[in-house]
Each structure stands twice: as structure tokens, then as C-alpha cells.
Amino acid sequence: MTDRNLEEAIFQLQKVNTENGVKKLAEEAAELLANGRQIEASALMEKAEAMIAAKSGKAAPTVNHVSSNPVTPQEKPKVEERLKVDEQAMANMAGKLADGLSKILMGAFQELERHIVGESRKISTSIEEQLGRLQATVESFTQLQAKFEHLTETVSEQRSTGASIVQKYEKISTSVTAIEEVSARHEKEMGAIRTESTALRGEATALRAETGALRGETTALRNEAKDFSTVITHQIDGLSARVGLHQEELGGLKTTVSDISRKVSGFIERIDRQGEVLRALNETQVRRAAALDEVLGVLTRLKAPAESLVAAAAGQL
Image 1 (cartoon, rainbow, N blue to C red):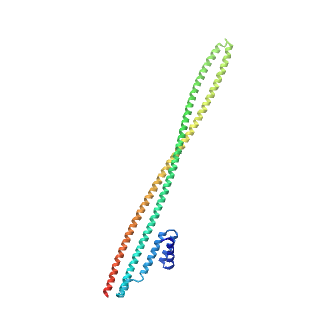
Image 2 (spheres, one colour):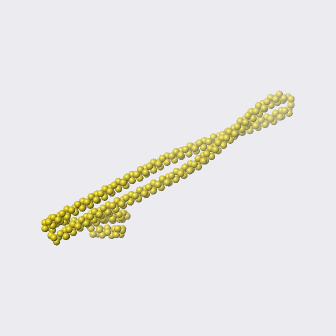
Image 3 (cartoon, one colour):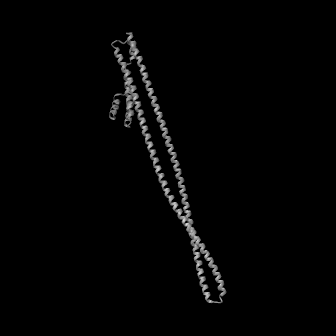
């Protein structure tokens, strides 16, 4: 039944039938159709039609008629026809109820399936996005590791340069010490020969001036070596602080990965529970089908007493 035909049927049912039960079913069907739930609205319409058919079938009860008045041969075909009409109405009502229930269950299963598929897609999309972000973070940390290795190599080179400077400083210190010793020896020799030659005094004075200059240069080299050592120490401290920050970031990443793993486990448990719900719904549908079969069996057994009543009426004649 299309939406247009269903809407017209609901309107006609509301217009013709004023009984509370049928009218309420028609109003509920109209609300469901307005919300786009056509299958459930069709099921309610079929239920209302079955109620109307059942009430119209009860208008002329055959049992009381047979028991109060004897059935004549002319009325016997009419009685049989009424019995057949009642049986057909009950069979139609049972069939419509079964069809309505099956349609409702099918609609519920389809909505549940669409919901599960949508949730699964959302979960897979979220996991893929998180994995992409983790991959980008790992790549950035790989680049940071390469930069850190480069900085380590630079620090090693600076340490080797500082060691070579220290060696040069030690050599210069040794040379200065040797020069000081030579100067002392020269002073002693010049003191010994001071009375012998004034020319040697001038040379001794020039040599002292050179020694003072060497001492000044040595002091400057010592200060430069100290400053360079201080700069290298500050750079090493900065690198150590950066390494500590990188280690903290790696710890945060490990915590994030653990949280994501727990979330994925929770999503898997939810999917398992939804699968169990689907199995329970399937078992319920099977039990309802068995109950409908039992109802049809009861209706079949009810048919036999009606035929026996007709036979008894014929025997009284």
C-alpha cells in the first residue's frame, strides 16, 4: 500500500468508525505515517480492519440461533454459509495479525541493522582518524629523533674541539712555564753579567717585555677557554632539558594509545551485546510463529464443533 492510499484509508476509517478502539488505532496510524513509519502504520490499519471484521462477524451468532430455533432444510445452507463466513473472517483476522507482526518485526530488524551498520562505520572512521594522528605523531618524533642525533653529534664535535683547546692550553701553559724558567735563568745570568755589559741589559729588558706579552696572551687564552667551557655547559643543559620534554611527550603518547585500546575493547563488547540482542529477537520471532501456529490449530479444532452442531440440528429435523 502506497503512502497516498494508506492516508486515504486512515481518513475513511476515522470518518466512518466512531468506536473508541478503532478510532484510537486510526489516530495512532496517522501519527506513525506522519513520522514516516509506513510499515507500522500499515500494521495498525490491518489490525483495525481485523477488529471491524471481527465485530461484524459477531453480529449474528450461530450457536444461539441453532439452540433456540430448529434449523429447517431451507435455512441449513444459510447456516453453513454463515459458518464459512465466520471461519473465513477468523482466518483473515489471524492472517492479517500474523502479517502485521511479521512486518513490524522486519521493520524493527531493518532499523536495528541500519543502526548497527552506522555505529560500526562511525567507530571504524574514528579509529582510522586516531591511527592517522598517531602515525603523524610518530613521524614527527622520528624527525625529532634525527634532529636530536644531529645535536648529539654537534655536542660531541664541540666536546672534541674543547678537548683540543684544553690540550693546546696545556701546551701553551707548559711553554709559558718553560719560558718563565728560561726568563729566570736569563735574569740570573744577566744579574751575573750585568756588570760586564750594558748591551745585555737592553736585551734582557726586551726579553722581559716579550715575556709579559706572552703572559697576557696566556691569560686571555685561559679566559676564552673558560668562557667556551661555560657556553658548552649551558648548551648541554638545554639539550638535557629538551630530551626530558621529549620523554614526557612519549609517556603521554603511550597513555593515549592505552586509552584508545580500552575504547576499542569497549566498542567490541557493545557490538557483541547487540549481536546477543539480535539473537534474542530472532528467538522471540520463532516463538511468536509457533504461537501463531498453535492459534491456527485451535481455530481448526473449533471448526469441528461447529460442524457437529450443524449435524445435530439436521438430526433433530
